[in-house]
Length: 78
Image 1 (cartoon, rainbow, N blue to C red):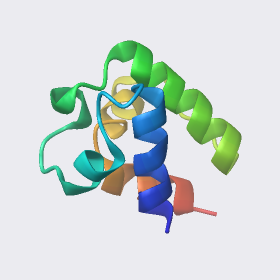
Image 2: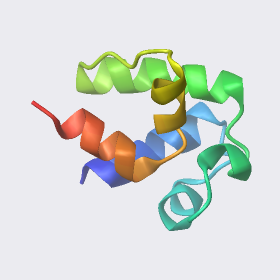
Image 3: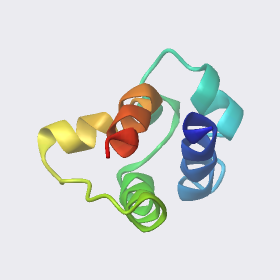
């Protein structure tokens, strides 16, 4: 499942400051859970490498990094 894999990538990118389960269960932005700007950049790299997409570093692109549902929809688009 894409959302589960993204949650795992969040955990890896944050050095487990945000666990995969926290990322999946949370109703608040990932940054509120502890995903830092450095973690976001690591997450961008991981998403781009794994899913072959380009995450734009715009306000909208960075906001998407706070929401697993939006990320899953983004990487699922052919």
